[in-house]
Structure formats: C-alpha cells, structure tokens
Image 1 (tube, rainbow, N blue to C red):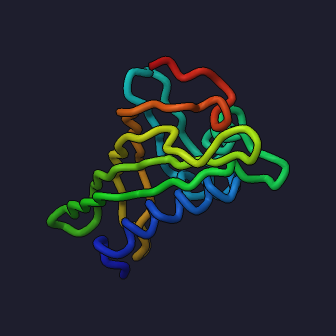
Image 2 (image 1 turned 90 degrees about the horizontal axis):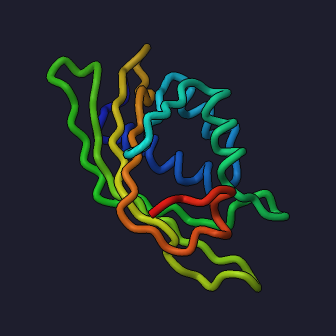
Length: 149
C-alpha cells in the first residue's frame, strides 16, 4: 500500500509534468476518476475524456507539442483521514512560461489547488481538484481563451 505522504505529492507533481509536456491525454488519465472545479465558475468537468478535452481546448500548444510552461508546485500539505482510505491536500502553483520571440520568461499565473484522493486497491487516485487563481499575468501565449481578472 502506498503511503499518502509520498503518493499524493507524486500525483500532484505528475500533473505538472504531464501538462508541461503537452500530454493532455495523460492529464485526463490522471483525473480519470476525478471532478475538476474552478473558483468563480459553476462548471465542473468529470472523467478522463472531459478533462482531456478541457485542456485541449483551453491550453495553447506550440510546434514542439508543449505549452512552453513549467508548473511549479509548492507548499504541498497532505491530510490523510484516520481510516487511511481518503486524504485531502492543499498546494500552491506558479506557472512560468517563455515563448521565443513572443514572451520572455516570466510567471503568467499563480494560485492554489485543493485536491481530494481515495485509496483503491492499494493505490491513491485523485477524486477532485479545485483550482483557485490568485495572480494573473500575461496569459496570451498560454491560454486559448481570455481569463477575466
């Protein structure tokens, strides 16, 4: 059985790796059993295909297939339930981006994640991710839509 203290940060860091690689199918796989919600929006996205579609329609990818970003995850705090079958976490994210000829290296957005997890067959999986955006910078090279401040 995976210990929550190691497995849960690994899931959060895996999300960062997959989105920065432009692997939206992999992001969908990671959230196959999860619902994603966004502060200030009533929209919820649930399941592998819906999550992959969300990232595909909202995140710009360049000729190399990546969004030219680095999602930096910090301040990860994991709280496991006493029964050991569920857990919650809170963390910060900062997205750095650099696009040659269009955008010098800079932070483009920062905020917080609130995740929940469940232990199934000895492995942890994500059941929800709530996104709270705290700081917004130059997102024209990152997102395929305008994010209202």
